[in-house]
Amino acid sequence: MSGVEAFLRQAELPGNRWGERRVDRAFALGAARAYVPSGGGSADGAQIPPRRHRTIWISDTHLGTRGCKAELLLNFLEHNTCDMLYLVGDIVDGWRLSRSWFWHASHNAVIDEILRKAHSGTRVIYIPGNHDEVFRDYAGLCLAGVELAGDAIHETVDGRRLLVLHGDHFDGIVTYARWLAHAGDRAYAIALRLNDVVAALRRRFGLPYWSLSRWLKDHVKNAVEYIGRFETAVALEAERREVHGVVCGHIHKAEIRQIGNVLYCNDGDWVESCTALVEDYAGKLQIVTWTQALPTLQPQAAVAQAAE
Ligand SMILES: [Mn+2]
Image (cartoon, rainbow, N blue to C red; front, top):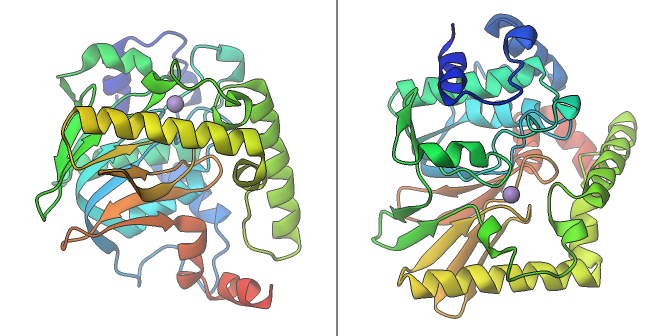
């Protein structure tokens, strides 16, 4: 039994069909790497030193659903190291409706890579979201080297205190146009499927990845309003907790901006925008969009982007 199986069995997840879909890690990694166009054989990362960060935050990976960009996520995790890794909720999804449970070899590889980080010195803190709320019952425990928490206070290297939480608790306050901004709604699922069609077409024509659903969020008035209200609600909570800033996920919209006295950070997602929030050793916070960072690993992709 692998570490991750032990991890999940311990949690006694309903509808866990892990055993049926088990594949060995070598195959999983091979399949995942085959997805990324190799661009001169550099995609295996052998010659590329990983980028070092003090802290990485990722959320809304939605492993267990078709929408998860697990291959890109695995590639990101393999090329980026950190002292602390925060998993800010909605990491695994889909087990409540077993019909929609989708588990690919690359999804296993992502979990294995996270556990590998945990076992080789990275402190991994998992703050469950609404799609993986089953783990909320285990807050305070450490499973397979991963610390579970309801929320957390992160201190940056320059001494700022950041409240880290998923963000779904603010849904009750914010009720505008969730259909687009909230993962799990039917319209959102349709937008994501359309997104994949667009992505496949663009790949066919050698164009870089571009997210339709992200574009909609930026341009549809209701969604823009919803996102604004969500961000304000989260910032108010941070102010109430007397911290310098907040890191959350949930709405699949990466952002770093000042809201009043609070630095609002959202690490985005891995179903459409493929983003992470990172802190360097000077305390500088930054959003990494892995679909843009990839061309530096892949010369061919970089050419395609330049030609657009
Ligand atoms: Mn969520």
